[in-house]
Structure formats: C-alpha cells, structure tokens
Amino acid sequence: MRTTYRFLRAHFLQRLIPRSRIAFNPRKPVEIVGYLSMAVGIGESARLCADSLSEAGRAISLSDVSTNPDENSFAGWMPSHLSVELPGSRIWHLNPPMLPRAILKKGVSNFTSAFNIGYFAWELEVVPAEWRNGLRYMNAVFVPSEFTRRAIAPLTKAPVIVVPHPVTEKPATEGMREKFGIAKDAFLVSFIFSAGSSINRKNPQAVIEAFRIFSAECPSAFLLMKASGDISNDEGLRELVGSVAGDSRISIVTDKLSNSEINGLIRSSDAYLSLHRSEGFGLTVAEAIMQHTPVVSTAWSGTADFCDPDNTWLVGSSLIPVVDTHPEFAALEGAVWADPSPEEAAAYLREIFRAPELAREKAEKAREFLLRYLAENSYEKALQKLAAMQAS
Image (cartoon, rainbow, N blue to C red; front, side, top):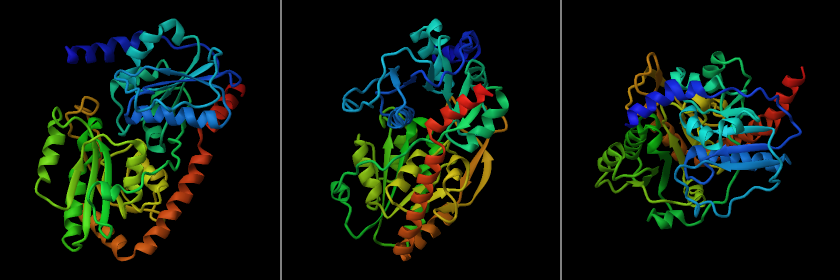
C-alpha cells in the first residue's frame, strides 16, 4: 500500500495542486510551515528559519504540520514577533514528497491564497520526477546551497535563491566526556547523523574505517557517533552498531540526547569527521564549526559553500554511481555521489592530533568565514531579493 501511495502521490497528487497567482507582498507577515515539533533535520530547518526572520524583525506566523509531534522536546521554543494577521507568503520547509499531505490538510484554497516559497534541500545533481512535479506549483524556491541551486534552477521558471540554514552557536552542555566515560586526555572524534535520511549517504562506515586507520597510531583516540534512528526497525543501523561491538574505542549512541547535549559532545571533541557522500547543506558540519571544533569533511556537495582548504580539512573523493534502497534515491538514473578516502581522512586526523594549536586556529578561521557567509545570505535578504524581483 505504501508503494502504491507513493506512486499516486508522485504522479497524480503533485499534479493536482494549483499554483497561486498571488504576488509577493513584503509588507505582509510570512508563515513558516513545517515539522515544527519534530526532532528531525527538516524540522530544525523550519525552526531556524522562524528564529532568523523573527530576530530580523519580520512579522511571522507558524503552522505545524508534524506527522509525529514530540511536543515535550520543543515545549519552550517560540520565536517573538508572532502575527495573527493573515500571511502574504509562506515558506514550506517540506520536501515535495511531504507537500501533498500538508497542503491538503491546510486546504487547497488556503494554499492559493498566499505566495508560496518551497525550501527544498536536495542532495544530488539528478532530481527525481516527484520533485520536478512539486516545483511546478511553487512561486519561488529557497535552497540551502549553491550545489542544490545548480540542480533545481534549470527545472523551474520560478526564482531559486540560496539561503543557508541560519546556524548559530547554541548552548553546549558541559561534562559530555564524563557522561560517556571518555577520558579527559583522549583524542575525541565525533560524528552526528540521522540513519533515516539514508545511512549510505551519511556514510558512517567510512568514518569508522578512517578512525581505525588513525587510531592504530594514536592509542588515546576515541570515536563517538550519535545516530538518530530506531535500531530495532533499522537493519542498516543495527548492522553498523554490530560492526563495532567489542571495540573499546568506538561507541555509537542511539539514545535520545538534547540539542545542548549534542552541542556539548561536539564542542568537547578534538575533531569532527563527516565523510558524507552528499549533503544539501551539511547542518552538523556547520554546527561543529560554530562550536569551534576542527572539521574534516568530504570535499563535495553542499558543504563546499563554507568549507575550503583554508579553514577545514577537505577529503578528496571520486564520484561513484548512487546505489541505495532509500525511496528518494532508488533508481535515479545517472546519479552519482562522493566516495571519500578513509586513508586521506585518517591522515588529516593525524595532522590535527600532532598540531592541536594550529588546528584550533584553523577552526576559528572556519567560524569567522561561516558567520560572514550566513550574514550575507540570510532569509531576510532573500525576501528582500524577492521583493526587488517583483518590483522590476
């Protein structure tokens, strides 16, 4: 039944949704629609958007269309400048496969009563048919990186504007090493990922391989990976955890951690290692940079906007065909993604280990660059761009 629904949604429901004829009005409030009460990356992107526009003084309203709300996790979260006035525009922090359900829930007439902006975070150069169908009813599209813009812009006549996730330095819990029994003098490497967004794309297997090469020469090294996912129902995650069973220097945590605990883990790390095959943006990489942690990252896809050889350690990669059972990536003809070198990543970890002061200096450069980049490409500036386009 799920397969049938996906087919109907992709080929029929997406085509039934009409495009709004409303012009963008910069003086009216903006409604942010998304999984606002869910602890998932796409929910975090919606919350970051709301916070950013609110802090810029823009009047906003919120529409939570969460499928599995976790109200306890975000009970204290609420931006200021909330408006009760009807919105003139909406930013949909939902990828096209999620849109029909949310649009039908809110009502088609409601959808066409505002200028609709899709915030689409796609991770490959080849775009699925359903995404192309979803583009046709959006008045504008925001994307998190130049990588994603290059993939999506040729498929729509609507404006496509790069708006990176507005990452900030968030509170970080102290004592995370003690919490997980990691020695104070251990060289701690960390990686945070969600198994639900394709464990192959996040590529934790390569992180483990790189760490094992590195740790053979560094007895004090420890790898801690925080994985989001249900180990009882996710075979890939279960196999990953099983692959490190009995290794006293590698731990994969699947327990739920608060945002401040995750930030604390990253901040207490000596290096953050992301050997992703592809990222639309690279939220955890940016968060690690904000926490002043040296970053080793794949030299491809969305992270290239804010990671370069002057501020991060970039791992060279060949491009290989995408092979994945995830519904978003299965049977995408001609799609490729990165195959980063664990050996090169291990060499960079050795470099950071041998020269920690130089590594921290480089990490500060990364943070300074990221702060400038985010300020130059904010949501507020994107909305101003849209207003200028409408006026011209």
